[in-house]
Image (cartoon, rainbow over all chains, first blue to last red; front, side):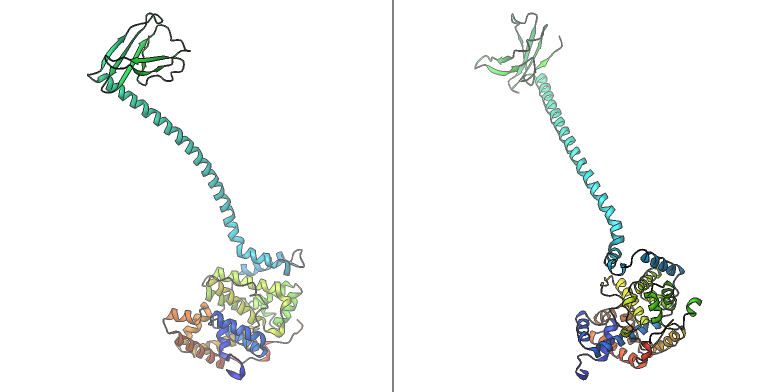
Amino acid sequence: MPNGHPFEDADYDLYALGALRGEENAAIESHAASCQECAQKLAQARGRIALLALAVDPVQPSPGVKESLMRQLNASAEGHETWQRTEEPSRVRYRATGWWTAIWAPAAVAFACITIFLVVENRKLDQQLGGMRADVAQLQSQVQDTEANVALFSAKDTIRVALAPSKEFRGASASVRYNARLGKAFYSDSLPTPAPPDKSYQLWLVPADGKPISAGILAPATGAGRPRSRRRRSP
Amino acid sequence: MNAAAATDQRISDWSLIERVVARDETALAALYDRYSGLLCGILNRILRDAQAAEEILQDVFFQVWRNAAQFDPARGSIAGWLVVAARNRAISRLRRRNLGETEELVENTVVLPTNIETEAAQKEMMGKVRTALADLSKDQQQAVELAYFEGLTHSEIAARTGDPLGTVKTRLRSAVESLRKKLPAPGQESIPAKENA
């Protein structure tokens, strides 16, 4: 290397031109920082390469640029003697992030609001969906009951048994349709007065042979425990 | 240069900088008139975007306004720094690179080999630069242009042109050596003595 220096003169021009890699640039900068002679060569190389700008025809900028610059000077000079140092970091940050923040900050807020709205709406819809599923299940149950009753009524082997009125329910009539094959019984009655609401009634089927079979419990007050196939006719 | 700038032709860049330090806006306006055409030309050539070029142009001169007090005549020329700063900023924008905060007005010493403070000096130097570039081979011209106007390194130029890396290095080195011989050697006029406006 020339005169004990690690770099040739052309290396400084290549550095100024920007053609070197990062580590090559760092080596030159490091050496120039400790060698005044090479620092001067580097400064001259920068100047020489800067002259290449003169290969391009000058272009006059629009008049608005100078006007804007003058306004910027006035704005920066108003009311601060120390702006040169104290405002520099914030200005750099603003220039780097200002327009970005101006766009994304409102967008982020809007996104957050939309997200909250969607979460709330989702919960409401979940609740509605749960209620609708319960309704559907109830309707399906009713349809199954109805289908079972239709099968019971339409089956040729269904028998109808008229029940004898007791002393407690004078003038009442009741009957049971029973199908042993389907395992279904349908109870219907016609009562001139409502059954006492504080009582419940056990309905038994007594086959010709074998033990009595429970056909359900009637609870006039709440309707709970009624045989699923029980039907009350209008008096 | 416009008429207003022409009246300031006798005033050196350093005298204008001293007035800028004293918060004389007309001095910065004179510097702007003196170099805005040159800088806008190079910025447009690099960016090919007039609006972006004018944004950087304004930013460079605002940096001069902000940091004028830190200029040191012993460290180089205003014109040289303006060109280097404008080019660096344009390349950074072109390549989507962030220019470090250290890339400020006084960081890089730039010594121009000649004084280009007047319009006549700029035109004279323009002729010499163009002649020096025209004397390069086509391959050398292409390599220099890719490096200077697009900020490409040796390896990036090789990738762009499809030439071997060694060939590109040799080509670019011989090109800068040729330019070194053809362009003026550094003279004392590149660091003009301070004078009163």
